[in-house]
Amino acid sequence: MGMSSVDILVASDYDRTLANEENNFVISPSVVQKVNEFSKKYKFIVVTGREKRFIDKLAIGLKPTAWILENGTLILYNNKEFVLCDDNWFEKDRKKIIEILNQLEIKYSLGRVIIYLDGFGTKLDAIREIEKYGKIEVNRNDAMILPKGVDKGVGVMKFKQLIGFKGKIVALGDSENDYALFRIADIKVAVANAIPQVKEMADIVTEKPNGLGVIEILDKILSGQLRKEVNID
Image (cartoon, rainbow, N blue to C red; front, side):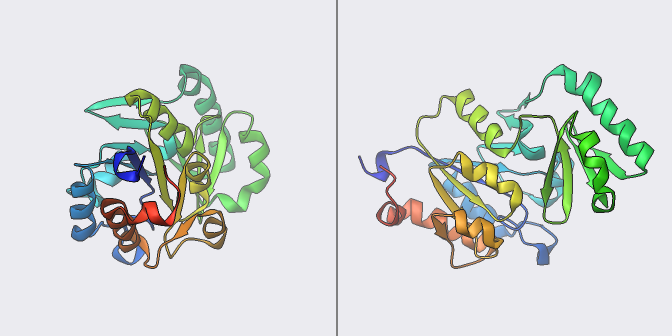
């Protein structure tokens, strides 16, 4: 069975993968056009640590199959929202973490599910205390606190289950919080600007950085060329 008959789901990170830092993470129209065209034939999901309110401003016109936001804790699909944590997180654990952050005077902001940290690196001794209640994920210079047992990979697997997807997952990423995405992927793709550790894990490293690297891979899938490069049957 060739790749043309294998169902494919592309799971792509957003910052420094779909959109580049030089453009303040505003996605370029050519990437929007390519992803929207691709999404008519295959499934394409954006998997990001970002909140919806920021994505709405940055990814104007982008229409993927689904959004997995806040590092895997929130799935937006078919105008429905799926939250990947239990009530205990909101009723108990998150409140306790907020208490600790306030005591330590660490700046933070709250997402729909997760907590975003600002300037956390100076108070590393607090990690042990917080890790009783949640999980800390570092992504380049940022950090976020999630419910235990949830990450980008978990979010993608939950979505796969939700839609009964049986095909292959192609993951695209650049940074530490994409390890979890790579863990569940059949084919791991690092964009040219990815950190060295992500490139080492990848099956393919794109020639071009950021969104141009994503376009490169989508074109290879659409043309059937990717099937020749990696065994996806």
